[in-house]
Image 1 (cartoon, rainbow, N blue to C red):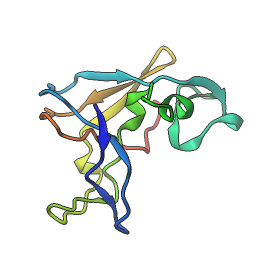
Image 2 (tube, rainbow, N blue to C red):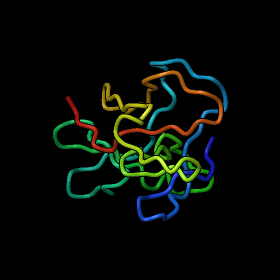
Image 3 (cartoon, rainbow, N blue to C red):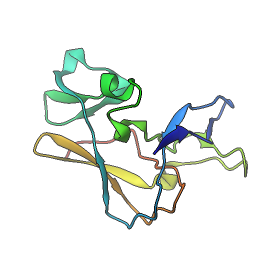
Length: 130
């Protein structure tokens, strides 16, 4: 489900929305498919795009910015450089609990460990296509 993220930037700013688990989710589970338009390198929104081959990106900007969001996978934030207001802990790449996988020009969000109910899903934004 999509809800307000509890995390903050290192400057203390709110992130806005995040993607959360509503049930316990096992490791290596496909959570969602990224929904968007295929676009060339010159025409994509950098913050909401995933490289699906050498010259094409899946641009999820429009499907992430409607109400309700069509592309829920795009609501996952990255743990990098965030803080937890409850504990004061600075998050790093090691705190991400999901990964992006690309297969046959489609992109998916997978868990990298067990996810607990109400836990926010976090994914590295520096995803590299193999």
